[in-house]
Length: 366
Image (cartoon, rainbow, N blue to C red; front, side, top):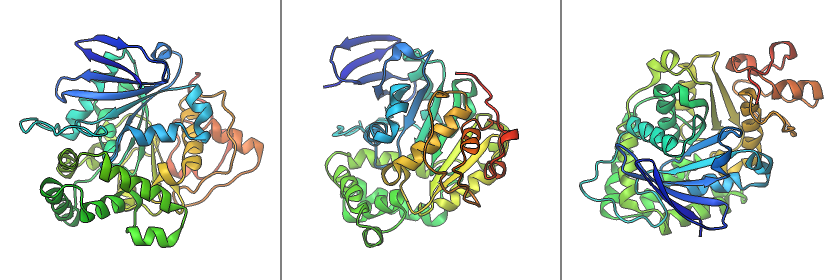
């Protein structure tokens, strides 16, 4: 059993446990009680990079913990702290949210993240979010640039729901509310996460059967469908960020998407509206879900990005460069690889595609 603490008005009550993952309940101003799971010691928040993760619809902290525990993340895990946030009612086996509970909108959830940082005495973080969680972190970065060292946004969209998405999500919401988890809702969530229908995914690769089966099991056995509906509804009612991204999002951002992702076009739309000197778009070939299908490639790019922020500079990076926007850059030359590790925080998406030792520098020291 993990260490559990309840924070209210800055105070904490601790239950000791030897487990490395600590569970804490944080009281927030407008989001109610939020559950966080912490990997690493908070005693080192001033000397180690702190990652704040926010999950997508149909998921929770468990997916990020599996990624952090992957062998490719071992060195990062040892040198970092991860704070995984479960949004209201999205914890494993959560009870139904009260009928009078007002599920917060996307921006309000971003404000709730600051309450978590304040309660845990964390000065700033590197945001790591997926899907709807990435959208929340983008809003957090816009409103609190001083608390965000950088953002890693997987399958993030900056637009409002399109007509087809709106009616499809309305149908899914109705089924989740009145039927519970069912084949229609499950198929939609599989498509949302992996980018293709279940049949197409399994026909394409037998290796994907395990991750999809595990995801389906989680949907059926641990996620509360009524609470999930509330999160889906909030994401459906999101406001547009596209026109204000360039002027208001001051934080460095790495957008990440699988080439088979269901919302790849919206990721590209977001990239086109961002400040090109503070953003990078990374595409990973042949996958719809980056975290579950390509953890090694994603971990590789995560390290490169974080080193560009001036953190984890002692880590050595191995492996080839992954597929990126427009072109694929691969280098086995040690000098080019070292240059990639030390890329400038002011690099544009176009510049990042072409290794150039002279334009790459480390902007900050760890």
